[in-house]
Image (cartoon, rainbow, N blue to C red; front, side, top):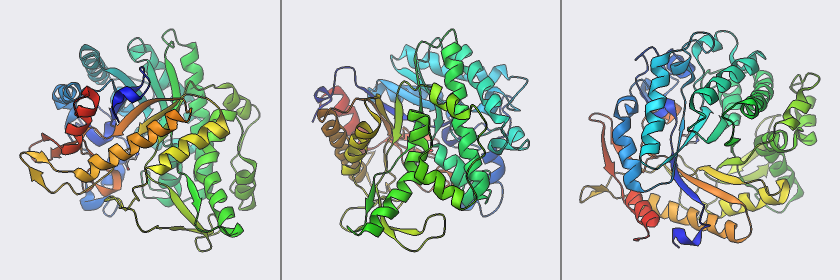
Length: 448
Ligand code: IFM
């Protein structure tokens, strides 16, 4: 397999997110975000680690862009820190923060790399959380204003925009499970948050269509999983369908069809947690047409009926036979093919982008100055092959971003989990090539 097997305009890239790499949390007027607050509370993150310094990309961005250039990628997916550009989320802007993204975007273009920007990758300005955060319907307007400002400032050079990254995680991990900022445990609120996130996605698309610089592409990024029944029993099939509604269709249907899936709606309603939807909301969702769908794929879920709770009366089974990553995620490249083919079958020919795919491994072995991560290299090769198989099956796949450019802050796991194509020594901030990045470079340059 070489890159020539993929369509000529296929884009290869790497992805990151602001809070996970930038650091400089209190530098140049950046306002606090909910992860600064959440991580400061003992017990929330491993060793109480935060993104305060992370990879210090805010200062080392030039070196990191040189790595991207050396790697030979076409596109770079990064996120904008809302509280760096608007310290309070709304109102006064912070020009020094904007200048950072200007430098970054110009630096990418100078190196021949397409800048692709995510508006929201989980780091809500704390000032907005203090006003109710994603639970307050006003956030739809706050997000729209922020999005409009970003399109105005950077839309002349950024031609690929992502509204939200993995809104499921924002709603459920942040507001029901409490494992992510803002650390709440209220499932009714979590479902209301899903609705506000979806409305804000639609509002950002509207703002983009109205922007003078809205001549690029915009869409959402969802974390999606093939749901596999553990056995052929009708009960396991029903359990897999339930989880599919909760994780996948609750987002896919509104984003791509402008409706909520009836079965999941009825299930939430039976528990008294269906969202409050105001007249016109569904029309707004339906009217916001995406240019593409961003797909983050990491693993499949194998589902058995029974266990769990009244929301999800099921158990996720850990299959044996395949390797697992440091996150205890099964390595299952076939799942990527299954997912892409299913999206085409159920949602038509909307262009798809793999906006994240990658793996955490221990990365302990160093050979000749290179991190010897054969596990990650073979993970990537297997998933690239699955993507190619999907392309050959007629899936309209356009981009592939490896998660992540650098080892970085893996949220509640702190710095324990290494996902990078480049190793980061957090003491010295030295970046080191890995066998996987050398292999990716060879794949891109056609020298493997
Ligand atoms: O690190 C995260 C990223 O922020 C969102 N997608 C999944 C990655 C790995 O857990």
